Amino acid sequence: MTIKSLHKDKIKILLLEGVHQSALEVLKSNGYSNIEYVKSALDDEELKQKISDVHFVGIRSRTQLTDDVIAHANKLAAIGCFCIGTNQVNIEAAQIRGIPVFNAPFSNTRSVAELVLGETLLLLRGIPEKSALAHRGVWQKTAVGSVEARGKTLGIIGYGHIGTQLGILAEHVGMRVKFYDIETKLPLGNASQVDSMTELLNTADVITLHVPETASTQNMMGVAEFDAMKQGAIFINAARGTVVDIDALAEAIESKKLGGAAIDVFPVEPGSNDEEFVSPLRAFDNVILTPHIGGSTKEAQENIGREVSGKIVKYSDNGSTLSAVNFPEVSLPAHTDRSRLFHIHHNQPGVLTQINKAFAERDINIAAQYLQTDDKIGYVVIDVETHHAETALKELKAIDGTIRARLIH
Ligand SMILES: NC(=O)c1ccc[n+]([C@@H]2O[C@H](COP(=O)([O-])OP(=O)(O)OC[C@H]3O[C@@H](n4cnc5c(N)ncnc54)[C@H](O)[C@@H]3O)[C@@H](O)[C@H]2O)c1
Ligand SMILES: O=C(O)CC[C@@H](O)C(=O)O
Image (cartoon, rainbow, N blue to C red; front, side):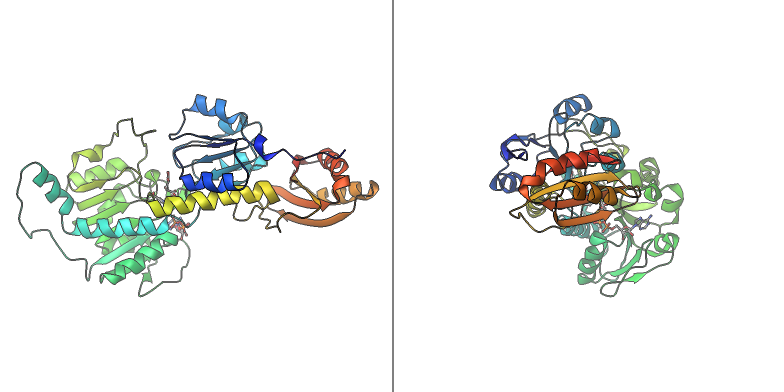
């Protein structure tokens, strides 16, 4: 009798933070029915307890998958981030345990770009403040401090998927677009790249951030940067809360250095919709505050649900790791009539030689072999005749440097 891979009924999937139902549809239509669906994020203790026996976990931006949490995930095969950002996951801790992390790098980018353009138009007209006053019975009919977007300069920091789309949208309403990025980027439309962030801060009427959370972007906007902005300029952050010194921003609003702001992301965000949102920015009518919903549209969430669950299915069914953020990428043909195994190992000399030698000594013919490595790990997927699968798996598990080995099908 040959060994069998884990039946799909036994593969446990935990989906947190109310990921879109499209994720469930994709998983179920591919035979994965053992799914626990939770609408909120979990606190650390509950997360450790629930994650201890699941094979796949799906999260959004609230769930913190720290080294400690991942250490409790005894059976975890892969992590799906149903969003762009993966900063909430200790991706190195996942990688050294042989756990790929997938995300959705494009699906919500248009939604963020549209929101930022809308906020730009509203803030240039002073609408948030006028609206707040009207709600309190104050009629402020005035053109003072209210300008058109046409001819104004939009300064984009981080000209990636969101920044580029925003630039194009902004040009449609007649804005001039300049951007600053650490990489040299192809300017789309009539946009132009500037050499320094200071140059952008000095000259733009609206500054908007679209950088990832990294060591280099931590508090990249602080007292000096707000000082460098034009008097009365608008500031927007829909990137990550850690990128802005929030007290410095509050001070720049208080002192009227800035004419207004729109902030979607915060250094500390409530863990659920039941928790109070606490921020010094609540004091200002000319600051649009949104609860991290830049990418929260029906279209974006539905696409993200399909995209990330599709990646989980492909990994589970075929071993494909295409577009994993922390793993060597292998894109594989679907099911064959042979058995397929994977082997994740520390990237040290001689592992493939050991595997091939062990298989040759056992007369196991390798029908196909796909290997990719990065600086830390190697990932090899091997197709063998089904009657060799059991022996092949035993041999793989015995190889020096093995992190994990599994029969895929
Ligand atoms: N508010 C939301 O709901 C929401 C939704 C989606 C994405 N986001 C955030 O927006 C970020 C950007 O998304 P994207 O899809 O455009 O990412 P992206 O990776 O396509 O682009 C990021 C750009 O920032 C540049 N960059 C990196 N470090 C920089 C630095 N120190 N200074 C200047 N430029 C720098 C990169 O070179 C790149 O061009 C994401 O990382 C995510 O954190 C938020
Ligand atoms: O949906 C979320 O929680 C996060 C959205 C956004 O910040 C992202 O990284 O894609």
